[in-house]
Image 1 (cartoon, rainbow, N blue to C red):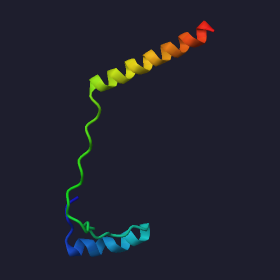
Image 2 (image 1 turned 180 degrees about the vertical axis):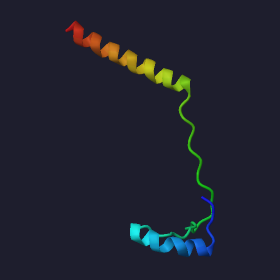
Image 3 (image 1 turned 90 degrees about the horizontal axis):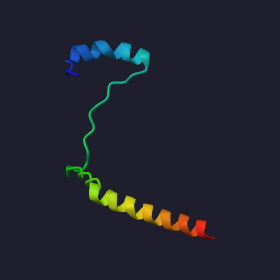
Image 4 (image 1 turned 60 degrees about the vertical axis):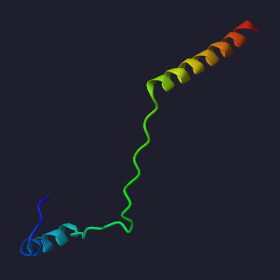
Length: 68
């Protein structure tokens, strides 16, 4: 949104108050350190190893249940 000059801000104040809106000041953080980056999602190989491992566990459990 483009910045408003003071005259435009004054013109908006009565209308904004009627609607219940308030013009806000910008807020700056106390600390200027950059935000930490997101961690990388798991790679496809890791997902496949987990899937195959859980599949093997499920088959073994079902085989033990079926053999009784």
